[in-house]
Structure formats: structure tokens, C-alpha cells
Image (cartoon, rainbow, N blue to C red; front, side, top):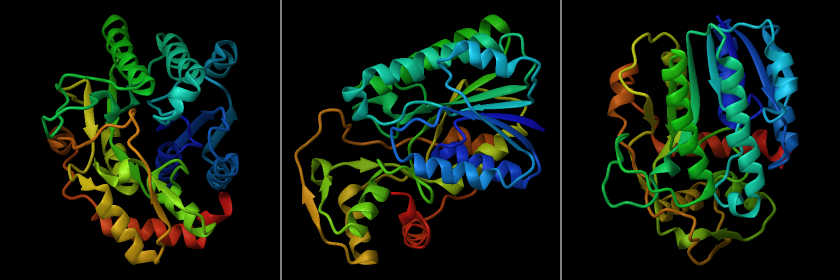
Amino acid sequence: MKIFVTGAAGFIGFSLTKSLLKKNHEVYSIDNMDNYYSTKLKRARIQILRKNKNFYFEKIDLANKKKLEKYLKNKEFDVIFHFAAQAGVRYSKKRPDKYIKSNLIGFSNLLSLLKNKNFKIMFYSSSSSVYGDTNIFPLRENALLKPKNLYAKTKIKNENEANKFAKIFGKKIIGLRFFTVYGEWGRPDMLLIKMLISMSKKKYFELNNSGDHYRDFTYINDVVKILIKLISKKKFNHKVYNICSSRPIFIKKVVHQFKILTGYKLIKNIKKNKLDVYKTYGDNQKIIKLVRVKKFTNFNKGLKNTINWYKKIGYRFF
């Protein structure tokens, strides 16, 4: 298949593309190589992908409609994965312009240029952050959305726009609400990688909310397996799906396990961040029923794999 992946230099985009190439798909990709986090890490990801002859990459910003239009001209794809976006909840308060440019303008540009394309299906990344704070768990796809930050609001707007576009132009477009994805090649603003960076530099790690919250950690390899299975599916009964392990873990427990595995103890608790939600815990029954996932990776195993990757390779990029 010919597959188009936006954001191949990103965490999920890279991991998916690597797997697609192993399965002999042709992958066309774009990324703006934004400096939100280490471009050294992004370049390393792209360098790995470029070793495969079926990988085609161009540096393009989705917000640049003219350049995007030129790129897409005369190109047709079987499947599209749209993962290019400005990530990070806390950063949305500091640089709201980046979220408007990438997540809103970029997404609109892409949709408008795909209306006359003959792709079979498009998947795009949404987020568990759209749910906001609630006391009704597990979070189901039809739950009331209560976004607490700009990042979450841009994702809700994306979902609404995608649904309208799909209806008007008769396209099959599916949203994927990713929960806390972790693992090898992860972003440096994510909890585990941040802790590893602090450990290697022998600095104190500032633990938000003193670790008094829960996250539905979902291992990257499990996410990729789900995405690969989605390609072969023809019938979708829903417009959006939770992508999660449905196993919430107390952050204090995560930190405790990290200490045991690494011996790192320089942890400093800091006060609550108003942009953070207390708990994310998703219901994954819809996606399990669709792709027949039998089990998810045990968190301790995923944590060990992440630590080992950082010690062997990852430390070079931060």
C-alpha cells in the first residue's frame, strides 16, 4: 500500500512508519521538524527511516498551504495517518500561537487539500485531554468533553471539523484519542524520558502535583500494533476510538518503580499545575472489539524497555 504519514519525525509517527516499512508498505511523509523539543532526536528518527528505500520524506509545514498543495499534487494514497501536531499541554499556555498554527490551521489546510483525493481511509490523532476533569470512569468515547487547556480545545475542534468534512465529502475519517503513550524514542517532555534525562545529568526532577494523579499508560508497541491492524479494517461503527490500556497507574507508584529500577532518588515535589487533570482512565472496549487486541504490555516491562533504550541509545539525543 501507499501510505501517507504526517509527523514521521514525531514519537508515534516514527514508530508507526518504522513498522509500516518492515511490512513493505511505501510510506510518504512530511514533518516541519519543529524545535519544540530536541531536533537531534527528530533527525535521528528520520535518519533511521531513510535507510529503507520505500520511505520518502520532505520537510513541510502543514500551515504552509501552497507548499503542501504542491507536495500533494498528483499524489494518491491508500491510507493516511495524520499525526503532525503541536504536542504538550503545559506548552499551550506559553505558546498558544503554535497550537493555532499547527493544530488548527494545519489540520484545516490538510483536509481542504484532501477533498478530491481517493484515499480509502484517514486516521488522525486526538487526545485523552479532551475529556478534562471528571469523576466518571472509565472514560468512554461518548462522555461529556470538558477541556482544561488550549491543546485539548484544538483537538476537539479537529474532531468536529473532521466529522463535518467526512459527512460533506463522503470520506472515511477516524479519530484516535491517545492516552499516555510511553516507550522507546519517546518525547523529552514526557514523564519517563524527563526523569531519565534528569537522572543522567544528576539533576533534581520536579514532580508535578507531587505525583498525586493517575495516568493510563499505554506502551508504544501496543499502539503501533493497533494502528497496523486498523489498516485492514473496512467497517467502523464509530467516528472516534480511545487508544489506551485501560489500566490507570498512580504516578507515585510509577516514580517508586523507577527508583527501584534505576536507583535514582533526586525527586523534588512541586505544587499542583492547574492545566493538569487528576485522572485519565479510558475504556478501550470499542478498539479491542474492532482490532481484536488480546493483551497490553505490562507497565513494568515497558518501563524496563524504555530505561534500557535510554541507557544504550537515547541519552545521545538529549
